[in-house]
Image (tube, rainbow, N blue to C red):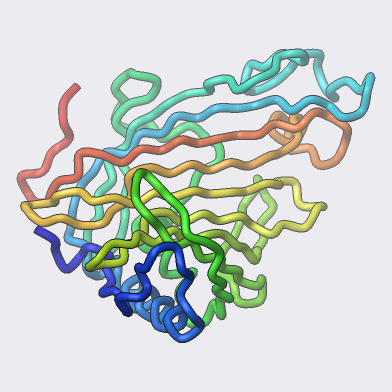
Length: 291
């Protein structure tokens, strides 16, 4: 059955679902208002639970646009093990964590790295990471203090379902989103798309994308995030939860290796692919699943 935690909104009007006709201005305002109300209440409606988060990390060495320019530093040196001529996506590592959602807060416990069970004091490898999948991403977009600008974009299909697509944008001065790259920290504005499911009874958030608006002199560029939601049953009730996430970012090879800003070294694009599974109710009987 559908639980109160499922981020579902009553359809605003029957005409909202007619063919591919876009909602009019009044319908759009009502739909965005209903989306905001549900998004701001989303994390408070989730039960305490545990799930498994699996992260696969990849790196792509971009071609150097300046002909004849070689990488700085030692010849072929790269913390990712890439040679100066290697192209295409290359797997870096993978790790599994247990996520505990308790009291509306997330905690993470490393379970395994590269297929080997983690030791007691092991931590995830350093690198790009994302947070906010369990509520704060949606909350930040729909928080009235963000003054997000929403615009109707199109009708579309996603995972076999008809969806409405809305764009949103948040200016830096209203943003609570921060990017950290080494010792560099920056609050950024951002924009993206919202994919909202259409059916005869409900409207459900299915995907949120985010792209940070970063000044060109910041050492990290092209920071994007995709988050897919879907239903999972926890203790007999269906909730809308994160199922898959992807994050990309780009830095120079010199910055990745040595924290050096500037120079002419090639660019590296990092990609995290994250899957969430095995949702179950949190309780004293909940334990790590043995391998």
